[in-house]
Image (cartoon, rainbow, N blue to C red; front, side, top):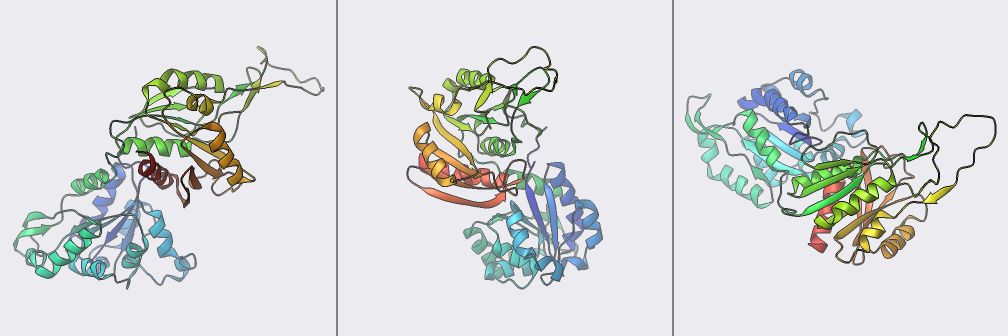
Length: 398
């Protein structure tokens, strides 16, 4: 079952508040929703909770030192800034809130926040009078105007004996509010078909022709479309990754099966995303029995498979179409030619000759190409790349 934070990377910043003792439970609740959690512990936070306890729960190294020589050899604070889908400061002390509002980068956590374009969520926890102070409220207002989200503190008895707003909310409530940040309505009501994975073209009952596609990029698009409110039909070939149970999942094997499935479903959709690595050719006459080795050369006659994307684009009432161009040479030229020949709205250029962003990798780096623009999408997790692709597409075509 796909959980609400599956494949999401949450960076938890723990600052100097007595509520820091709740941090391990926050980590656990985020993990329960499927998140990968890493922790940055400020010097103030370390007075209330140990690095070891957070490391044991998160199963990841706890980061705390901006001047860590080993980490900074690879620009550690920048790597963490790029890694995160969401930065959650919980508990957020008055001091860290002040630092964020003034743009300081005097410690690791503040530096990461400045260097990241991830969702920023702040969960203040402090004395009720501190929380009500004009300075603190002005800082929160400024941060909210810059796009930060506020998790309002609970009211009740505080460690100092006071009563009022300032208590850190229950961990499960914080985790649920983080999950809501990834649910949007940008594609609400849209019906989308996404193909993904590799097709298998049989040679005989044992052997087949295929490719190295894992389906990870396509599944990231499925997840992102669902988060944006779309009704998604996922037509998949050979994959080794979990399906999203919120999609209508249809399994196919060969290119012909995928073609037939898509053409059957296409009249009920608004957007078609062709992300599958469909074999261009199949064996003309597959053997019904296993072909035995006899020492002679084996000659197979291959015939072209139907072009799924081109056929969809040629429909009289075609949906909006996005295609993928997996290229190894003359990449931009080939992708632009594919855009022209297929007749789709956009092509996503993917250089699969680079092992770090090619098949089976968890990261990607692509170029969004349409008739109006050519936009580079920097190397990042396939989840973030999928979101960027969709945001660019929505802005231009919807």
